[in-house]
Image (cartoon, rainbow, N blue to C red; front, side):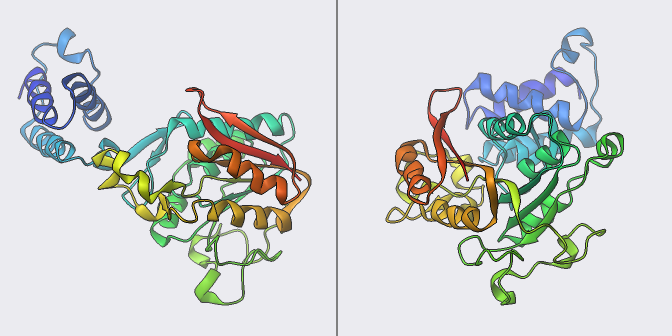
Length: 314
């Protein structure tokens, strides 16, 4: 099948769900990711052929996208901070605005590389891996309640970059941020609440050997209120994990109170914390950290001038 014909067919299929221009961009993104063509290939090589099997798989992928399934789940890939991450429906698709959280941490660290970082509600591990790779020498621990998410996060493959930079892979442990009491060991002794799965740990570190206090704590927890579901696009609402997205309307800040408790016990004096937030609850979220006794509590806006993060110091 001619590539230009496949592009037209894909655009026609996906246009049933998305505007034509967006549909065409999705087609180009899929073809580049899976087949390896570029957005101009059909122009400079008008006779470029796609073999029947690849074309058939592409058409099926376009139909999945037309049903609302996100492109990233169809390809199994998402890009964050210039790197390619594996994603499945067990994890949220990394958002570009979350890159600003990583940048804030990197700016805080500056030239100091021997830092200990804790990432709560890690999901795909995009924050944990980005900080581990951007700050070679940093020791990063990341936790999540979802075994599916931890499987995805721990399987991210940056071996080549790590061998070049001597970066250390994060440790991924199972823990319920809401139920697990943040003891220095990080885990409550009751396995049902917070047992670190050995298979998810870095093989070179024994259980319990990771430092108990941290220079930096970060989190991008669930923060979308149930009442906001009606405002969300179908591809997000029907396909991304609700466990990682939604909080009850009557207690939308429950994760931020939990993060504050973890930070009170595990963040070193002078340490830095930053959380991604619901733009409608910026001041309310900041007040949690002020009342908990943290210093320099600051609301940080994203590139669209919306309240997006709260940072604090111990």
